[in-house]
Length: 175
Ligand SMILES: [Zn+2]
Image (cartoon, rainbow, N blue to C red; front, side, top):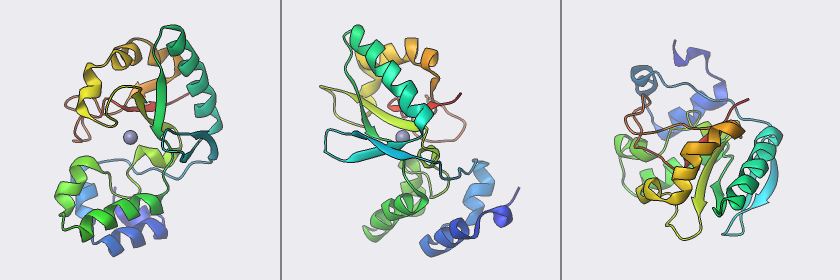
């Protein structure tokens, strides 16, 4: 496999960010096409979040089931385009971070599951968002026990093969 087969737009983004294609070849990460999404959810920061229709339906069912168990789940982040992911990298690069550091927390453009419109970053009321401590929340225990019933799985648990830091808040829907 090589980046030769990638869409030109994705290759161009990597060139612009000066990310070496080797990074992808060494780690054997899949690349993700941008999904067909529509804005459907307003998050706690009043940002519109978009996702695929199937993911939205599955989310609504899961949110309601969690609420019946006293867990108030919310979405912090859903779809991101390649360009939006590139913007995150650009911001961190201009703040002086090196690619290897950025990669610990942010996939390069094209390699984030959020491009599919099926990945959701979740939070529950009282907790700091996108923090490791979420792994000790009741909401996380609930997700571990029940999310699979709604088609959601935890993409980056401890010691994940992608080599990312654990992301207990990141759940992806698959039919
Ligand atoms: Zn995520």
